[in-house]
Amino acid sequence: MSGRDRESQCILLDWGNTLMRDFPEFSGPMAAWPRVEVLPNVKEVLTQLQPQWTLVLATNSIHSDETAIWKALDRVGLRSLLDRVYCFQTIGHSKPTPDFFDYIVKDLEMDRCHMVMVGDEFEKDVIGANRSGIRGIWLNEASDEVRVGKMYQTIFDFRALLETLDSVGVDSDAECNPR
Image (tube, rainbow, N blue to C red; front, top):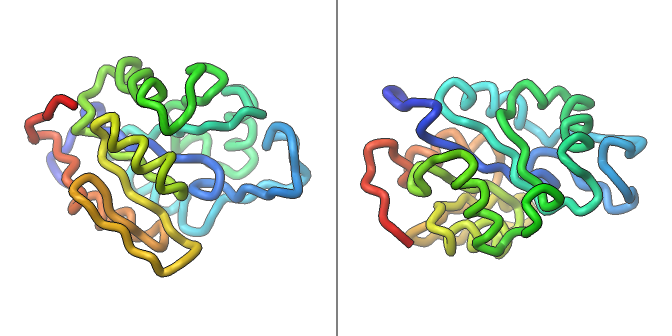
């Protein structure tokens, strides 16, 4: 990962069941839940990625606005590791629509080929990002199913993100192909 410019490449990270555990028994904003939990290895991996990557949370949460999301991130010690939060309530669109991803691309002023979306929902996170010209990494901790394509790969543990980023084709020197 040497030689990469942090401001020229970005990892979009889903929130629920990618960075933090989504407890279905709780409702309302996650910041107000009686229990919140960061998923295994997330802090360590984000700490290693932060010097080389812009790290952005990209969520469909309908119960939490940006302020509530930052509060939930504070509760588990993730706030300082993320640069931005993009949520449905701000954008007005949700994954997998291209409008969701287009909003983020425009706001960050970054080329799509220098971005990758990481999430646990294959259709919403990975295929949605792919349709917008953004590569994807499917975090599949629920089964042993592997999905690999031109624009995506599968990992089974958040720690695998470190090596997978090098092989998924996000490159600050790459030619960006229009959608």
